[in-house]
Amino acid sequence: MSLHVNANEVAAVLLTDGWHEAKSGTFRVGPFAFAGATDGSSADIGRQPGFRLTTGEGSVVTGPLSSVLAVRLEAAQDQERTPLQELAYRLDGRIVTVGDAESVRFVHAGEDFEVWLGATKYGPRWLFAAVGDREGAVDYGFAEKDPVEQVARAVMGDLKAGMRPGRIQGAPDGPSTD
Image (cartoon, rainbow, N blue to C red):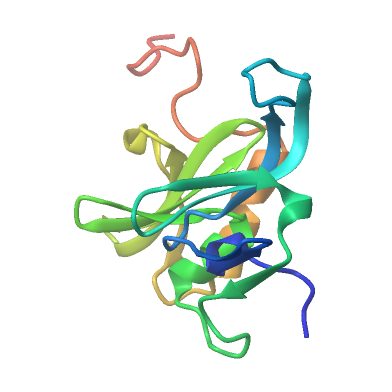
């Protein structure tokens, strides 16, 4: 049994008032600010560990992480993940669909990034870019059949080294004439 729970696989959360079903991929944990009074005033309780999820009906449930009694996961622990699910798990991200394509979006050092299987002149390859800057995508040379842990390692290695995909800030758009 693993004590690690992937937030992307949480299907429901048990609180004191019962189970709350989570829309797939909407369960999030992180620092939240909670008001300390019901009259709208604030006790300035900021950056407390909390959770947030969206139900199938569109309601948002948010609260302190300590109020979660249990979680129910979507997939059985021994069920194999798809490559996109595995990448989302390794990057602590979520799977999103934009148009007809799925990608994994994740946050690192306060910046949003995405990884997706894109069409290149070499065939489908895993591409990496800042969200909204697909033109500046990095192609690490990993094809669809390559293990996604290699993709995750390459992405995180660059991010931890301070490298970012896309154009260098302040760099000219054309080739140098020097």
